[in-house]
Length: 292
Image 1: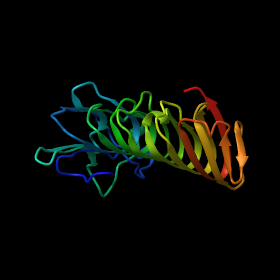
Image 2: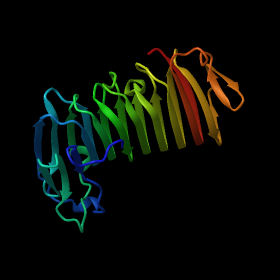
Image 3: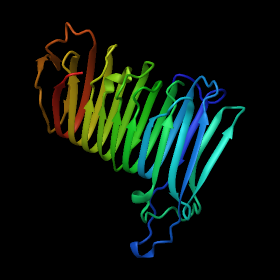
Image 4: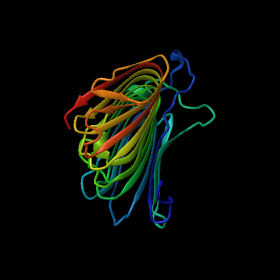
């Protein structure tokens, strides 16, 4: 992160721990589902740190309407979890989240993944740093049009979709994404206006779409354990790929190999360039060329 947390910087920590316990299917407990809603108007904040932790269920993140700093709604089982809302006006620290009612026992699965849902809308105007940790379930994360300084995203056994549908309002320093045993798709990464991209994948199907309104040069480091990786690049973007792969097939369509790297044919003349380092163990790497 470029600046220290605390002080006047707001901390939005959404700890929605609805993880798995070890109870048997026949010993389910009674569930009492509730919905909590919280929101706050922007009051001159200069920056915002956002930490999101969501264990299981469905998670939706999107831009908020003006002049909201954030808007949060969550459906949860109150027999197993307790909502937490804390705000320190002096330090500008805001904490929204959930905790287990019985920490020693943990939270039983039951129908948590099917029933739990969280919707978070974030300010467009305030520069923010987003840390998001998502466990199991389904996530739709729309970050287009935010003022995003950095993104650090981690997912587990999930189906995750990340989209930058419109350009970031400021230049991001870094976009870092990690996926476990998952289906992961990120689109419009060029709209993040980031200097660095990092992706680490375990097992699964991954699509990294670098389309968008490019206005700078950037680097990307991509590592993959076992699975398929599709890289999509705009036709007018200069692309250089350096790969270290073992038992991995590689589709070099539209690329020319020179020395130890693969170059797009417009590498020398392109206005903006992206260098991608790929480290893959088992699986396949496919290249698609797209319009912006």
